Length: 574
Image 1 (cartoon, rainbow, N blue to C red):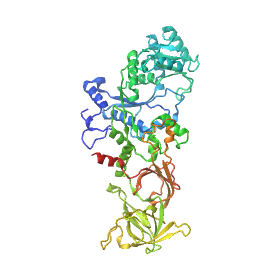
Image 2: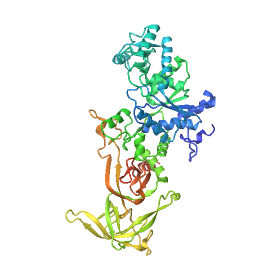
Image 3: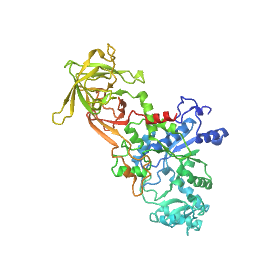
Image 4: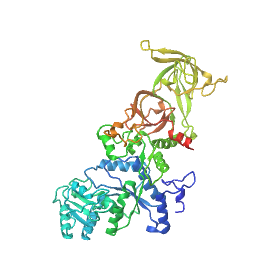
């Protein structure tokens, strides 16, 4: 264990020396030194299968699996399937895929809270027999009313003093389906005057007839999260139950259940959840976006779900690095989404091949280039990695450049193409604009007539003259058509949870969150469809081929532009 401080949360070696351990790892290392649990480290990731995982869950995945990997321990994947009315096998499958994609494995340790329904039922019987649980006939509204407030104690249920025999009989009949949904609950008998509302006789079971995706109609009572969670941890002998801060007030109840049952004492530790600027993290609100058609689905590239981020082009490596960079804190804060984008650029800059794509094409005819001639020019695939080699670019008399790279009457600091001005074509020649061709009716520029200097192939002019602009381009004859989607933030406000009175978070959706460009021109190297591949379009940013892309209809999503806001912020601070 003497190597633990030289590892990243994902288990890889750091390049910048050792880093201070966070407070969770400090607890673990202290326990290892004292021999607690014989030095064993066992964590779990317990998602509810009622939606797709998002970037906040990714942080938890990296933390739980990363800690297990770092300390030579184990991490279970356990689905908290205690509410069958909201769960679906689709979500189970998506969660498995997301965890694997992030680079983690649970081997044969895939569990479900439903695996323990029989045991949880027996645990409940045990608490009834020790006088620590009772069957209550109050409705859900009445239970809330009796619970009290943060400043006023609660009132005891009129059914709290039922005998053990009566409670056992009623609970058995609840499980047998004798009572209507919501008519009775099983509650823990703790303290209705407690300053912690979670300790005011919390509900353990409710009557609910719903077909479960694993147990079918076997059960008509289902455990509440607080009851199932801690007991499941204990059954699996989880040493560290790592939760987000909203569960801090639930920890006394977690500990109470385990103590009263006398079972394995798993330890709950809370950390700050991830809050990301311009992003919604609530599953309920994400579901609203899907159900109301504000996005195309859970994997829409505008969504902060792991599947949406993957489709947009974020890499597993960049998300793991993001999680390691933000670290683990005890206090909630809001992290800039620019940092996530920075982590992606850091990753793709090293390994994404460079291509040329023209998003707003303007045709250029090089009049002194032989009309029927074609040639191939060598281009570097990635200047950051010489091992990625080169590729050959076709060049011909007609090419496309970006419309914004030409101005008929340019300002003083415009260094691209203009009448009578010379620029360099990337990997190719110097060209000079000789004439502008316009539409006779609209006056729109439709074509440029240029000349080229054949002695400037791939380099500088022999006579030493210099040009200040370098343009990307695509040969018109070999160009491939593509649709390009440019994405912006989904919300216009940094904190979309903070809405004005009378408004909803949906009112903050950015109407310009996506711009779709048809008839873009890309180099032929991209012709073969390969959904999921990453690359950089020179000057435009990092892109990923969309899942719906085909060889006949290429679709590319821009993940992030090249401008790195976070790096500039850090430079100013530094």
